[in-house]
Image (cartoon, rainbow, N blue to C red; front, side, top):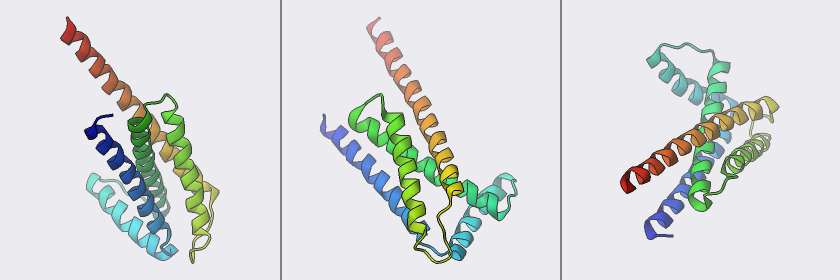
Length: 153
């Protein structure tokens, strides 16, 4: 493994951990703090593009997006490290496992609770992220392979 690739792998895993820390910190907020933060941030984005959502819709989108991002990062780090065919499964399973631990963590936060529905939303985000990652990877590998064939002709 080249030095630049090692650096890429390390940065990829640091980003995974950073995303997990952000999710943990967001989950450590009380229910009121969480609602205010996710509500204002997502609402501002949706207003820019002309979409109106209620508080529950905003929470759902926020959960989906944060775990979609985590799955993208885990997919990238896993593939960068091992280039294995099981990368999509590992990324999805790792993200869902973290979603479960996130809900367990929320049991200990005032006003928050363990909710299966949140795990399902988080898992949906993970599935979207892994699917997008897989498609992007296939496109990139196709472009690389095509470039090799064109370079050798």
